[in-house]
Image (cartoon, rainbow, N blue to C red; front, side, top):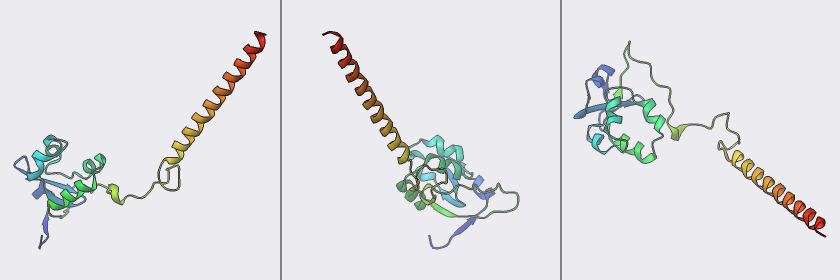
Length: 144
């Protein structure tokens, strides 16, 4: 795209049908018309957000890098905000997000919880085995 086109929300809102579908994601306008029939989630997913800001819906699904590349190929231009437009969604793309402060491990993953689970399972198994052996020895001693 040699020249970036600027479109307003009212421009985008006119393109909300299956044969002419624009969506806005992170203040970029995309022409999704050619992709409607091929969208893995079905055409109704795109039609529901056609002519609107689809940032939140796009990020909530957690699209793959491949999906983001397809989206880049459909870019039509940038959104030009004017007074009275809806406020932008403050969603950060999943690929650009930073680890949250509520994650249990410093790496941002939840592997600490997994390790704790396995440790508890092993401890429980060890206690059960010990109780089994104790009761087996106790019953063998009573049978003599």
